View: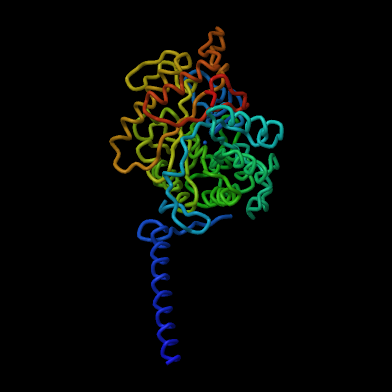
Length: 431
C-alpha cells in the first residue's frame, strides 16, 4: 500500500513539473520577438574642415565646391536584419532610436577632460542629447590607439582621446554618441598604400586642389579598411557609425584615372554603403551627403551621391544644407537665392522640402533624413578684388532659423557643425 501511494505521488509530481515547464517555455518564446526568432549579431571588433576649408564648411570662392562634415575638423564642413542585444535577442530598433539633436566634436575636443565635462553639462541643461565624435577624421588618422591590425601596421592612428573614457562618461549621462568616420579622403593610408589610391591620368597619385590624395572608392580593399575601423568602434561602444566623405573627389575629374572601371560612380558608393550595412548590423549606419544633391537630379555633381539611391540600404542620410555652401544665384525648389548665406531659414527649408518631395516618390526608401546645419561664419565668401561680402555672421538667430526650417519641412532631427567646436549655445533650448 505504501509503495502504491508513493508511486501515485511521484506521478502527480512529474505531471506538475511537466506542466510548469511548458508554461515557462511558452513565456520565454513570447519574449524573444517575432515568431520567437533571435537576430543574428554581426562581427564586432558625417568632409569637415577647419573654418573655411571643408565640406562641412571650407573656404572657397562664392559658388565653388567646398569641403564637408566631410570637411569636419578642418573646416566647417561633417540591416539586413534587426539589431540584437548583448544576449542575441532582437531589439525594437525604432523604439530605441532617439530624435537626435547633436553637436559635432573633434577628437581633440573629446580628449580634453575640461571640455568633455563642459559638453556633458551642456547636454544635461539643454535640448542637446547626442554628439558626433570623430573616429577617423579627414587627416587620415584614427583618433585613438586602435587595435585594428592594418591600422597598427601602417601607423595610421594618433591618440587624440581615450574612447572608453569618453563613451562611458557620455553614456553615464544618457548621451547618444555617433562616431564619424571619414572614408575616401585619406592623405595617410592612400600614401602608404598607393595601390589603393586614385591615380592621375599621367601617372602617379592624383591630388586635389589642396594637394591631398584620396583612396579609390571603386577598390573594395579600401572598403574593408574603413569597415574594420568601424567594427572596432562599434565594439568600443559607439551608438552609430556615420560615414563622411563617402564620395569621389569633386574637382579635377578629367585628371582622375578610372579607365579600369565601367560602372557609374554612384553605384560604387551605393554598393559600399550596402556592404557596410551588411557587415555592421549592431548599430545604425548613416552617411553625410552634399546638400546640393537634394536639388540636383541623379548624380549631377558626378561624385557618386544620387539622392534617390544613396539612402536605400542605410538608416540615415545627413545632407549638409549649409547656406554658405550653395552657389550665388542657386535655385532651390524653384526659388532663386542671390546670396544663399543671407537666407538661412529659406535655404534649409526649401532644400529639405525638395528632399521630402523627391523621397516620397521612392518606394521603400530606408534612410531617415537628419541634416547638418551651419553654425560657423563663412568669412571666405567675398570678392577678392572688391572685398564685397557674400556672407553674414552666424550666431543664435541664424542657427535657430535653420532648426525651425527643419521642423517646418517635416523633419525632427539635426546636427550643428562647426569645425572649431565654438557653438552658438544661446540658440539651444533649455531643458
